[in-house]
Amino acid sequence: MAKSKPDVNWTNKPRSEDLPQPWKILRCSKSGSPRCMILADDVLGCYVHYWGGRTRPCLRVGCEPCDKGQAPRWRGYLPVITATTHLTRLLEVTGNCYPEIERWLGEKGSLRGLVIELQRKGKVANGELLCTLREATGFASSLPSSPDVAPLLAKLWRLTHLALPTEFAADTERTGQTRIPPAAFGHSANGNSAGGNPA
Ligand SMILES: [Zn+2]
Image 1 (cartoon, rainbow, N blue to C red):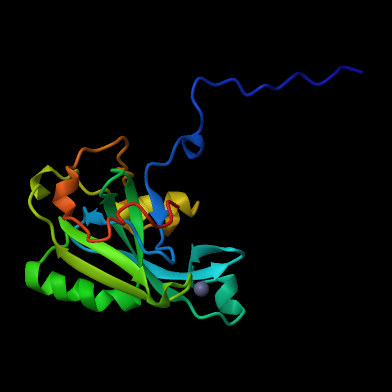
Image 2: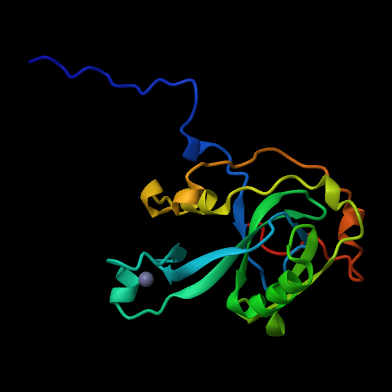
């Protein structure tokens, strides 16, 4: 009886999901988020569930958490660059943050270049999110361009392209580090600029 052939999957490049992911989700820890600068003009969000130990989008049709009675909650994602470590992240915000976001959108027409800081009410892990936006002190012109957030989230959530809005068909994720002077983010009184969850 012939033995089956060895089947080594030789390749000169890992699959894209095995490469370093430059756009991880950043959630505010109980000690607050690091200071970040927003790269996008507006926030992009969707309704999600915390289910099976992780956040995942509500798929509406045939959505298991919905079918089991869990109401989906809105989460927004802002592509940002962290002030001191210059990491690109998708900062997660809640509906509670939205009035502050909306106020700045009304005033400026865009969030790009604004500094954002999140705090947890009561400094507890699941405390309500408190959001502060403010103008950066210069340097906004040297910001990297904003990625398309939906394809990045779809990739992180391992969704197929079928779940993407058509205008987000192209995956334009950026890689690499960027160089923004820390002064652009202003100086925080307590110097806590790199705390938070590096998720
Ligand atoms: Zn659902």
